Amino acid sequence: MKYTYSSEWVHSLESKKQWEYYWHQQKLLENNITKNDNILEVGVGSGFTTNYLLNKGFDVKTIDIDANKNPDIVENIVTAQSIFYNYNVLLAFNIFEHIPYSEFLEVIEKLNESRVSKIFLGLPIFKKIILQFYFSFILLKPIDIHIYKKRKKLSANHFWELAYKDFHLNKIIEDLNKRGFQCKENIKYLNQQYLYFNNKNNNK
Image (tube, rainbow, N blue to C red):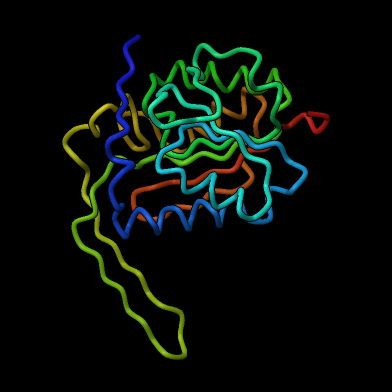
């Protein structure tokens, strides 16, 4: 299997929308991880998530197939074996769509066999925002309205996305449930879905 990836983009200032995505990732992690957790982030990206957590006192290591991103561990998670036994929390934001869905499920099975008890995922949704309205009121909660349309093709280097063909949210949740992980929380923001899964075997 040929995997494509790049490190050039991490050297540029990311968009305002991307920073909003980071906030929602951290919101999902809030109250769901502790300082006693051993956390492994798959995919270094810009380094924001790991650096933020490290500054908050969490124990975090990174794994990436791309050595140019300077991860703690240079390895392909699809072929990795024993590395997952060193961690009980796995973060993978906008990572698994870069590999075939069948290989994604193989990774989940390996996580279930190891000591991983919590999985946090970020997945893109196969649609494009064409209009966005934001209304702010002094005494009321802000209103954020978005109008979407489906895109014509997958993002570059993606094998699948949510709402593409039969890859719907319920399918992902059911497929992980069959492999030992129960969905405890999910947050949708714009065209991103963030999910928290807990291993159904509490002893792990």
